[in-house]
Figure 1 (tube, rainbow, N blue to C red):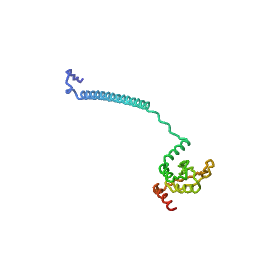
Figure 2: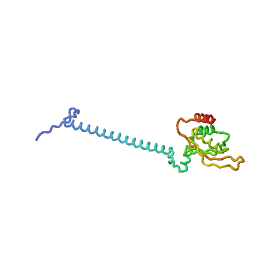
Figure 3: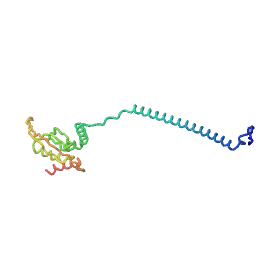
Figure 4: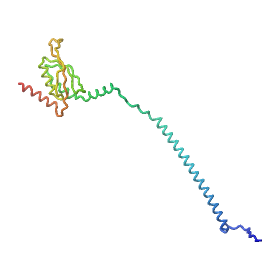
Length: 201
């Protein structure tokens, strides 16, 4: 029978047999690995909690913004009547009022009484009603008005004798068309009107 070698003396770790030291080292590494895994799991859990808290905070912020944001206005739809009214207002604003009034003032005379003017921007003209002493005064007035800026020509639409007036003037309706030609100004038209009486003389 082979004798057993039993040593009851406790030796320090570095003096232990190689197999014993290897087991101790493996156990130590296993413990460190378990601790590292536990620490990593704890960090992952903390990150998940932080992400969940951040998502909740973002959701609350969006709800607050939505609660304080007024609802969007419904799209504006205009009826046909409103569109026509807007276009008419724009046309009135685009009417060359100063030049037009200057033209009527430049051709004013004692033989003509201007009763009414009404711009029609859609047709690019001005409708008017006036009274003249006779047909020749009417024709002279319309010729002078049609030559004054911003008009291209003036035409008689209707004429009749005003029997209600003792002087029996000739009442006529006319249309003066706008002239969009550049370079035509009131000053040149006034010079033309002043030159005409000289030619007649």
